[in-house]
Image (cartoon, rainbow, N blue to C red; front, side, top):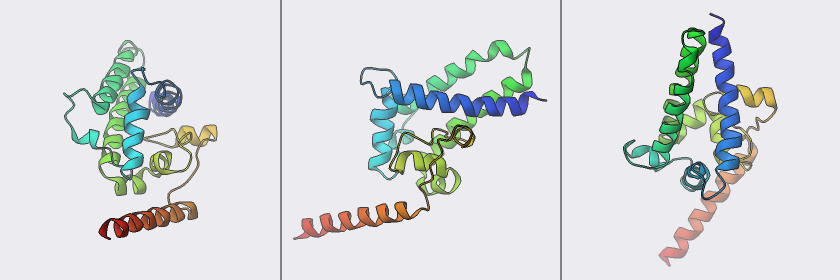
Length: 177
């Protein structure tokens, strides 16, 4: 049974490491397989108030959502050899991988839900610093490693929302003249 808390801790740390070093460092390089994360997912999320329309598309199309699902499935396969040795650990990691995909997809289809239930992930995309808050399904590794920077519900977020609303109103007024 010790495998369950160890699996949860491992999953949180693994998610943090992959998000930080693979999806961001390697993902910023245009020709990389991982570039979908930075150049599509982050761009969509930032421009659309956290919503990413790729999650409305089919998994059978080759897009950022299907690439993410493929990478997660590949990650899950890496743990197959551990199943007979550490079944609780393996099952917990598999649960965490499935949960990651579920909450990540839901959050980018329903930004209000994300802001309430995954504020650390909302902060990662919508906050002023996208180089922090690497946890998606849980903020644990960010808390352990000192990379959690709150944004949702802060005065900074309120100012940013007001600034965006004013900019939108000015554009609307200018286009109606």
